[in-house]
Length: 308
Ligand SMILES: NC(=O)c1ccc[n+]([C@@H]2O[C@H](COP(=O)([O-])OP(=O)(O)OC[C@H]3O[C@@H](n4cnc5c(N)ncnc54)[C@H](OP(=O)(O)O)[C@@H]3O)[C@@H](O)[C@H]2O)c1
Image (cartoon, rainbow, N blue to C red):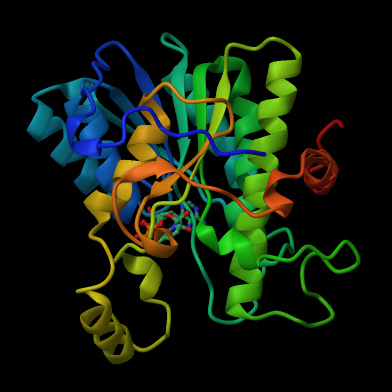
């Protein structure tokens, strides 16, 4: 898979889209990159539906969106916990209700996380595989009939070090580490996005799929050592190097709003894609393998008891 050049290389000069009349469903809007993306999208006129895990954080973001835009319809909150498929199903039902009159122009997956030891979701998936990859597949499947425009998937350059293991996809017999788990979950997200794009194109759907790596971004994702002091030390040490959340959101915003080839992978243009302005990035050979993507997506659907 070759990486076409992004025609508008300078983010600063991209025309700001007019999203008045558009409905955007965005996960992860309660914090970090998702909160910054939600703010910009609302300022550009979108009506945001924010499925959140932590209600009080979501309420604060929704209040800010309404206050800053002066629009009561700038944000609607719904509940979602990606670590429990029952709550993904009930969350999808809430989103459908909230978008029944409008449909969904954009479905933007930003929510995700890490664990520092092997943990499991309610259904017994390795936590990062469950939350960062499998649950978004189910949520998308349930919402897709209402989506008119685009699905955006926040993956990561961490997919480059992800390895699949068909015999032990959830690290039940060993091999788990933070990087192995996170890398695998993001490789799964990349492969799912690629195959979803292929499937939609094959049936002539107007919906396209875009993939994102936000860069190295200073958010709560770093605060997972289990020690508040160590988290603060690490944050202090990395502050001059990593980008603020608003800069990380820029790649999400380009993937969400700009004309792009199907299944593009957008991220920062600096060295090792750690920081910089959004551009099209190359992905790993595995993440570009359409046959592997089809097999992997089929496996993910089987894990979720979805029809092949
Ligand atoms: N930061 C980076 O350097 C970086 C680099 C590459 C990719 N990414 C990706 O960017 C995305 C956003 O991360 P971030 O850096 O903004 O981290 P963050 O500040 O920790 O935000 C994560 C968001 O995901 C939500 N979330 C986590 N677990 C959830 C669950 N089980 N159910 C529903 N929502 C859940 C969080 O909700 P709560 O408010 O309830 O916690 C929060 O809104 C993630 O997919 C991450 O993997 C980040």
